[in-house]
Image (tube, rainbow, N blue to C red; front, side):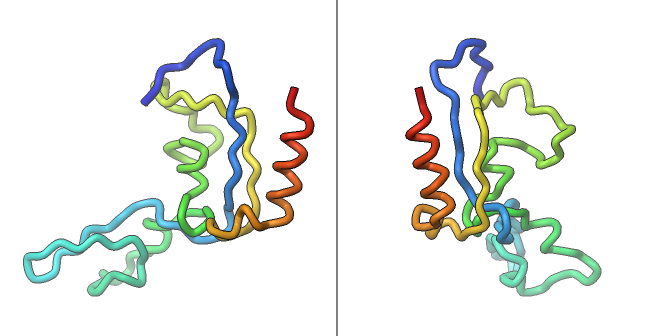
Amino acid sequence: MSVKNDDPAEQLIVFGGDCHQTPARILIEDIDNESFVRLWPKEIKAPLKNIDYEALMLEPGDGAVSKQSLLAKTSLDPLQPRHQYSYFPLQYAVMICEQHSRLPGNITFQDNLLHILLTKD
């Protein structure tokens, strides 16, 4: 948590992916009195019927970082305001359809980054 700074020295520009299913919540599965952390629905050994685990556990992202996390938000709903103690001086976000480890090699990522660097005052 952070408190809003009315005069931030810097504003952030973030780059990320938003078209790959990405773990956003974990599931703890108890099997034989042992607890197991599940990041992906396919890892669940004994799924319950009629539960959409993908909708519950996954969100858009780059496969490693969810869009919600990248934007430091608790919800992707644009009508839901940021929590008062969750200050994040975001100038804007650049979203690209790419996997996390391949973002820096993506030509769209490189073009946008170069544009930002060359036009910064």
